[in-house]
Image 1: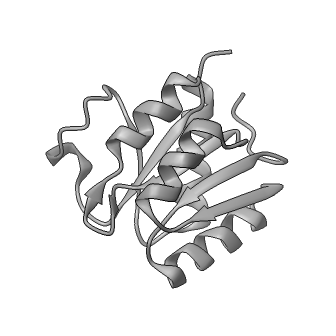
Image 2 (image 1 turned 45 degrees about the vertical axis):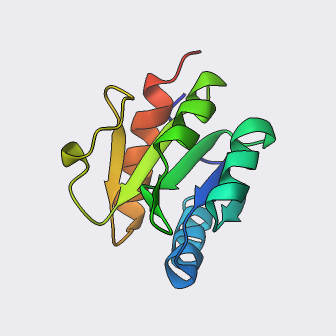
Length: 123
């Protein structure tokens, strides 16, 4: 499963303009639905009961790391892509081999990261 066309994406991004840009890029890549969440609390709720195929999580959501949210999502068998403007390897994620896309977002970077995350997801 590496094709992103037709999928539903949870996008967790606390910067409005960045979220808007990323959502447009994702739609341009053929994603059917983008659910944008801007707060840690809403992201936690969506992690538990949201309906989406893959998640793109900003590493830092208003000063809080999104790693616990990623763990919840991955426990559901849903792939996660981290988004960051800085080097993720310097952060302790506790999630093993993670897929990361650097900001600013581009279509090529998002497509590559989402495809990689979907390819390594359990069937």
